[in-house]
Length: 177
Image (cartoon, rainbow, N blue to C red; front, top):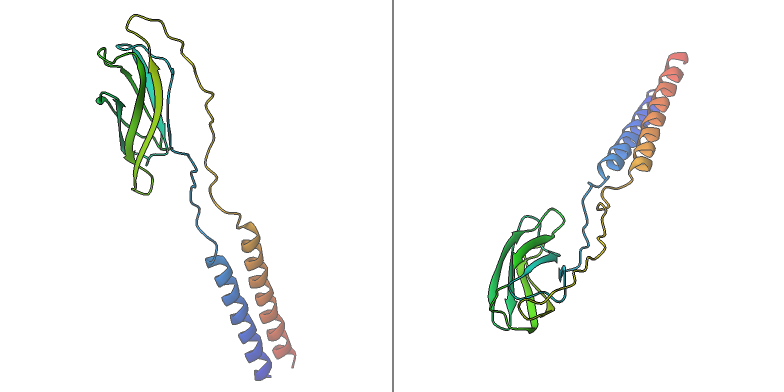
């Protein structure tokens, strides 16, 4: 009789151990952002001395992004990337910027801390010219987070209940004998 009780106890311990392993193996949730690195402007033909909004994506959340206009390199300013890694700067282009093609550059670090340097081109109009503003459609959404662990939890509960039932059955056999 003691043998039956001993084997039931072993089954119970094994079942509970398996349930614990299953419950502990459930992974933790983590956010995965897949934002491509890019820099865009609200207009591709701004006027020298006029306003421009520059948006850079793919940077580390909370990091500072430095913006500049090149061909005659001049700093435009800095902005801090938001929680999704986007930094937006609204500023005025230098009035001395000659009409023509120029590069807008955004420099900072990505979410892993690696240096990130992205560019786009604009064509400035002569001072006093009118511009056309274009607005890109914004893609919004939340990052996919977490894992579906409901199935593993159910399995663990079932194993624990079965172990408890086996233990009760073995005690009844011991008491009836």
